[in-house]
Length: 393
Image (cartoon, rainbow, N blue to C red; front, side, top):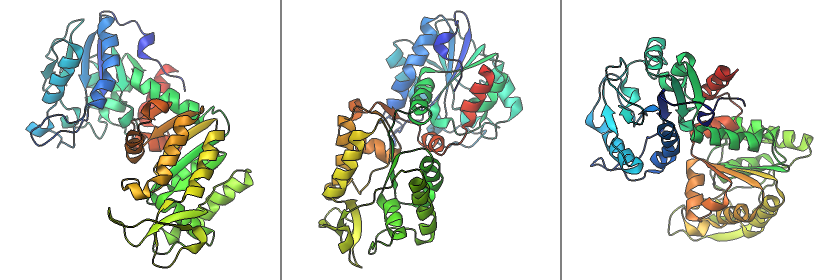
């Protein structure tokens, strides 16, 4: 991927417009409860300020109705937190699309919730041109929104004098490119979740690229059904057995594999008090719920991870929220932490597992992209990335 980077550009005296992802959780009183996304945005803002730019930052927050700013939709709490982190005032500007506000070199303003602007979600060209007129340099530093073609993620990038990626966006694209475009082999993907249907296109895309494909959760149950294994009353999608078999066949034709469980952990019910029963995969009874892989299977997965050159992890392999069904996911986390391979982890449940087992500093790159991360794995072109590539051509 070829795109311009913020740190490659002269910025002194320039008006720099940064599209950030500051969509952070808040409590009922409007207090920010977790500020990782704000902290991740600071390097790009500081770089522009230190280079002598006049900086404008905007983001979406929540799901506001276009044309109507409600108190709960305001970026006011974020302006305050940004001010604290940057050590300088960050003024919040409302009704900013038509200009009418000033920002001097060395100053930063926060432009109110961009999704309140009419035409934002539909990528309205008139709106995009107005926003582009506010700046000399447009910076997209919001990978989490890269799969959406909206006015602040796509349209403005078409019409701004210069369009580039901020440090957070660039790091995501570098890491994903390294993992999927020019990976060190063997390339191992771990894709788990409750349903094959939600990750079918990802699985198909990866089946043509990876050397091993570990599946887990309800996805693994559907693959087990495809190979004639019993899964009791476990979560699965019988109507997608053919799709699962097709993926296994694609892998086999390439000399690759989809290792399925040789042992599992079952229970009568899914609850915090449920008794975990480790059994051989061939011994699953009609009333059993498969809620994790067993110790032997976890070791097989760990051995594959130890031999991998590149690891892509999306999804826990069991109901890891309950410790009695967390053995498989914990084994994977620990194996990735011990591996010398380049590893990238993404997706909400995956990040929760990374945090639970305290391996964040052992994973090469943690993607905060959510839907954008999944669509990249699917092999889809992300609109916000595609337009940056076009502008760099």
